View 1: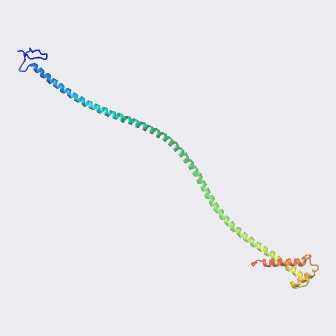
View 2 (view 1 turned 120 degrees about the vertical axis):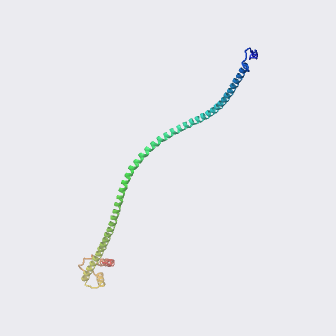
View 3 (view 1 turned 60 degrees about the vertical axis):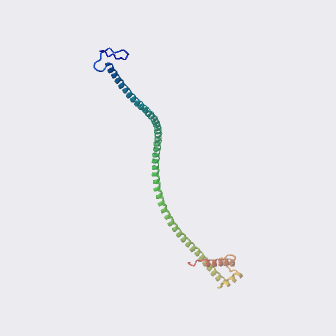
Length: 229
């Protein structure tokens, strides 16, 4: 017999049912199960989509942070590049300065060699100076010895001149005593004052005056003779 159950469109079913369950109800049940499965699947997909959305937001936030970090890294890289360029410039300057210092060191080495030669020459000059000073001292001592000898000879010469003066006076005195026929100096003085001796020319026209001067010279020579003589 027909089931006479209402279909989805409100029409009574005219198909005979098999068994105890109406095929309409079975179909409804299957559709309900399929609908439930579809809804569960949709809910699962919604939950998965929500997870994906959350993951997407998380990834987007992470991406933004990474972009910020990337930009900061790029800025730091640019700064590092600028520092590298500055260091390269400084290195070039340092290389130029190093070359200049090497050149100066070579010049200083050459000057040092010249200075060493000068020092060696200076030491030689010092040794020569010491030798010359020694010779000067020796010559000074020798010169002083010669001066002493000269002074001694000069003194001897002066003493000799004094002796000659004394001898000359004694000779003149003897001649005068013989000429005036006297023996004492006082008698000779009286005789010379009263009358000049005839033929005596040894004292010139004024014998008493010259005799007196000669006697003064003789006395001075006698007192000036050195004791060593």
